[in-house]
Amino acid sequence: MTTATDTSSADAPELDYSTAVAELEEILTELEDEALNVDILTERVKRASELITFCRDRITSAKLGVEQIVADLEELGDAE
Image 1 (cartoon, rainbow, N blue to C red):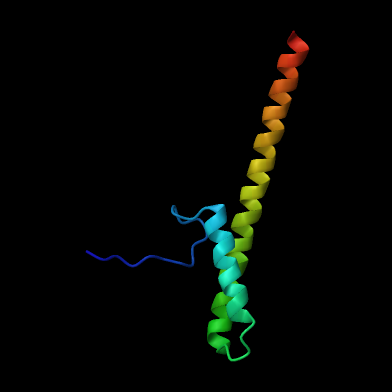
Image 2 (cartoon, helix red, strand yellow; image 1 turned 120 degrees about the vertical axis):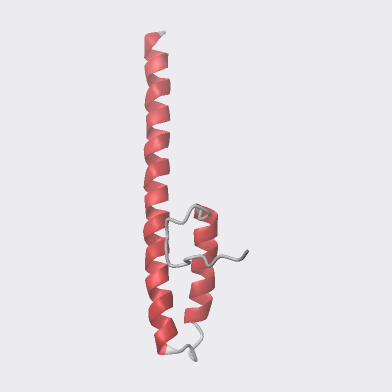
């Protein structure tokens, strides 16, 4: 059984940071093609925007996670 997937959702469960970046690179390549249909252009720019938001959120989350780990390690060091 084949199911359609919604490629317009940046928070799809199978999407991860590296997949999002790869898709952004594909979109960039498409956008560099001057023959790109204007209707497709709009869709691709919208998808790029969703992917950029997804990537920024992942970067922010990773940054906060690393900061928390460093803070926890500093607390352990201070406790000794």
